[in-house]
Image (cartoon, rainbow, N blue to C red; front, side, top):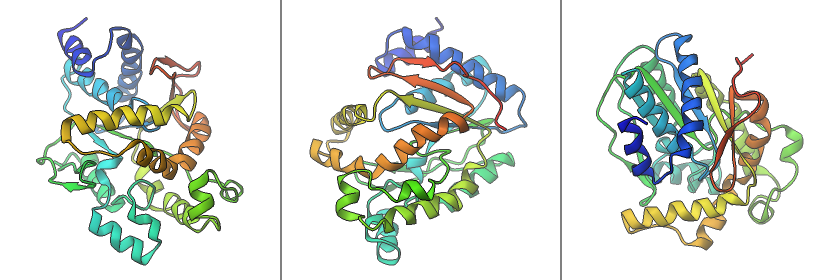
Length: 284
């Protein structure tokens, strides 16, 4: 075990078992990077609390320490529109867009601009979003990177089929979107500008979870940690309601990405990872 790996385990409070699968994943990613054009973008998709941010950090540290690469890490959450921008969107498009989360509530044009500049070898200032205040904060300083890791709950997801849009997924949709207007609006955004954004991804990792029910427990853990750090956060009831915004596309992603991702990682309720049988394949 390398010194940087010991620090990583300590920082994330993990046992050394994490390293066996994470290192295999990192080597798969490295193999892809070695055969890709310069300035590759690695995508990581996973539901809330599934461990995608931790995995992104491990991949970052692996590439920095084993290959001396400069690696940038950004979440799709960091591209959320500001409060004021979402308020305008809720007034012009649909009231439910006032709540951050679904496609339509990100500044996709900024993401495309950043990724285009990265692919050209230019310095970029990655954005940051503070969930404790539900708003954008100051960007990171401009910097050039060799590799960019892009993680998020809906990263790489393709639009839903029309037949899936016809049925309500949960109590939230039954109450607030019974006619399907909001979900169709989300799907429109996902089918247009988001697909243009996701085309920049060279290699997509997909975290497949055992059960959607685990998300509430994981999200509660995240919110507790956020409260300890920031002194602010959502209650259990607020979290339960909040994740219903994400449920439709989370379930769709868990189904559809089995065929569309380049590498699948199975994650159990205790966050133990295992590589799927077809762990590494070239996208068609």
